[in-house]
Image 1 (tube, one colour):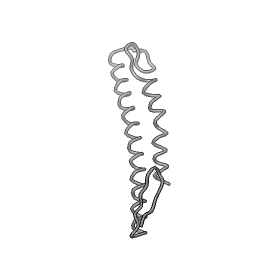
Image 2 (cartoon, helix red, strand yellow):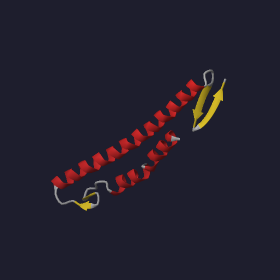
Image 3 (cartoon, rainbow, N blue to C red):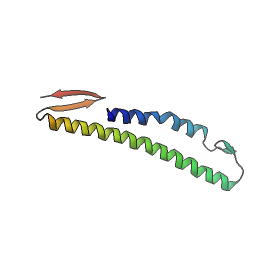
Length: 98
């Protein structure tokens, strides 16, 4: 269950990240939602935009990887509890084979 929750949490970040990147992205006459006032301020905003976009993107990846790790841990524990059985999981569907 934790693996699925982590994967779903990662997916929940996709739309806000895309909206931020589209709506707040720097343009030639404006940076994000603020009119360009100075080159220094524009540079600071571009750094903020790039670091925020990267941070949220990395968070999505880390949460998704946590879900994969939790899922693999469950498979490993199930295999240890049921020796002689093979467990294959595809798209959250588990199949057991002897």
